[in-house]
Length: 317
Picture 1 (cartoon, rainbow, N blue to C red):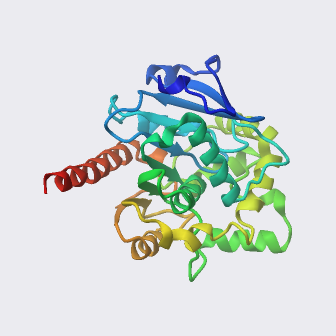
Picture 2 (cartoon, rainbow, N blue to C red):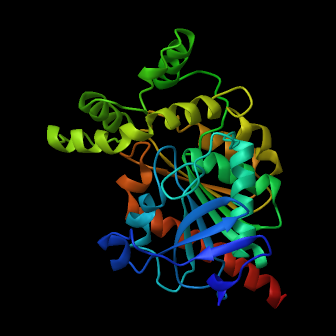
C-alpha cells in the first residue's frame, strides 16, 4: 500500500485527529511523514494508479486545505496529495530551515522521496508562492514530473511594477516590515488583503475579519521572515531564471484581474516553455483557487486528459 511505504530515513504517522468535517466529507485523509527530524503534514485521497498522481502546493500563509474547494470537483479516481509547505500548518517550522525558493523546492523533493511519489512521474500543481516552487521543482527534478499546472505563479521579472509591487518596494525602502499587505494584523488590514486578492468585492462582517486575523497573528513573525526571504535577491526571480529548463507539458492558469501578480506573466512563461498552454480567467483575481474552484478543476482535468491521450496516440504509431 502506497502510504505505508517508508524510505530508509522516513517514517510515517497515521493520526488524523485534526481533520475538519469538510476534509473528511471529501474523503481526504491526513498523514504525517518524517524525513530525519523534519515532519511533513499532508492530506491525500485515492492511491497511485494508471493516471499520474497529483501533488498540490499552496501559496504563502495558506495550508493544504486551501485546495479542498478544487478537490471537490476532481474525479474520485485520481490520486491527490496536498502538502503543507515548509513552516505552514502541520509541517515543521524551524529557524534553521532554508525558506528560499530553492530551499523549499529541495524540501518538497524530500517529501516526494519519502512518499515514493516519484516512482512514476507525477503531475505538479502550485499557486502563487507554491507555483513559484512548483516551476523551480520541475526545472530541478525533471524526471519526477510528467506535467505541470502553474496557477498565477510568483517568481517572474516584469518590465514594469504593478501597484502592489510598487507599494512593497516603498515598504522595503522604509523598512516598514509590519505593513506588508499580505500579512494583516487588524480586521481593517484583513479586509484590504481580501480585496487585494479577490476580484469579487464582498462585505465581510467585522467579527469574521477579527476571527480570521486572530488565527493568523501567532504566525505573523514567521510570515514576515518567509516573505522577506522569498522576495530577497536570491529568490525573487527564481522561476524566471529557471523557466527555460521546464521541459514537461505545462498549463498556466491566471485571473485577468490579478492585482498581486500581473497576468502578463502568463505570456512570459508561454514564450519560454516549449509545450505550454495558457488559460486566462475573466473577472477573476489572484485567489483563482477560491474564486473559480470548479473552473480550475475542469481545466486541470482537461489538461491531464490531453497530455495523457497524446501519450496513448504515440503508442499506436
